[in-house]
Image: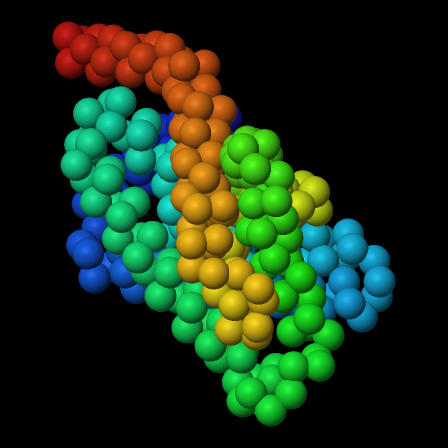
Length: 279
């Protein structure tokens, strides 16, 4: 049996969060760079599936390939870290400063990775700026505008909508990160991760790291989106929404539900060891 019970999953979450909190800045930058680039690859692949089949859900079904590669190779995804590192802090295996350090440098790495992949896509899909008629280019332009100026047109309601979509997104993304810990087999991990990631992408929710690629790419392709539009109407509220749900609905929820089971197991193990020593 390769199934891991939830209390053991929580232990894995705490250990993973503690290890991530100790990574050097160079490691965070490199792992964050690759994490964003792989999600960029997955996003363009998903969009191409949608365009070629006219079936939107096929894109959602294929998108998790990027997330799977990130988790299996141990790269960084700040949205997952929003759930993992706080539980390590609660267990005093990481500090608040280490947590914030991780989040900051991983986000910097994500921005570099997303923009670099966007620039490479610009060369590949526009023939280095010669033509902008490729269906993928037009798709990314529309998505970038829908993720920014469309919310701006709604005023304060737009901020609320994008924030809630970000919360709904990372509820599922963090579930994907911890469900990978619910099994010891590679195939089991892939299947477990695939389910929640397809769920979030198929419903058009807002993921901060995906947006660090798709919005800059749209701007490069000519979308009517400014730097202020990107950050004020999407990137900042999405980061905050991703953080809120990742911590509250996944990290803290798992901690409150299964912390008592971990404590009982530790007490039981201690008692067993004490009896063996006594005998």
